[in-house]
Amino acid sequence: MDRPPATRTPTPDLTPTQRDPEEESVHRALEGYYRTGTPPWDTGVTPPELVDLVEGHDALPPGRALELGCGTGTNATYLARHGWEVAAVDLIDHAVDQAREKAAAAGVTVRLLHGDATRLDELDVPGPFDLFFDLSCYCGIPLHRRDAYAAGLTHRAAPGARLLMFGYGPEPLGNPIHDVTSWAAGVTADELRARFPGWELIDVTPGTNSVPTFWFTLRRDA
Image (cartoon, rainbow, N blue to C red; front, side, top):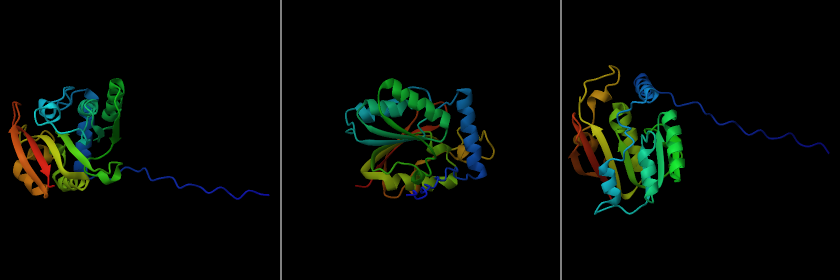
């Protein structure tokens, strides 16, 4: 008997999300940093602020963590080594490849995803998460995409979840790329209060850099 024709499975649409000119400028700039090997935020050293949150006197119990803008995976690997179930996202595929190598070398499991931190619905990161970590990701996001970033985290936040964010203040270095206004705008406490309804800004600590920087800690309402 003749066999029926095979049913063809549709090929998923893998076309990348269309980005506007400012988003494209950010993407090109970040790629340039990784291509030259000089991203200033990717030092290879886990910052003491995250270490204190994970290992300090009032340390959070290990749970589920999402890192936004994970770079080459130093901090995602650190979290996994300390018992956290970790997902991590970065816009630059070369950085994600290095992060996979770093996690494998450390013998830990990290779910590493190449994608946009402002478009989490396009990625396999359903949550809920107990901890979000952001080392200079948010302050580099174009202003018109920051509400989408906040909404994506809020949708995936467990009650009482923490967000630990490091960012530059307004105009720390001037505007190195004229069509990326976000890099001059930086990030402020007032902006985070406005963009993250349902969260409480519980701490703002100045960084130790030569230009204005801050560590922001937000807590999701229980």
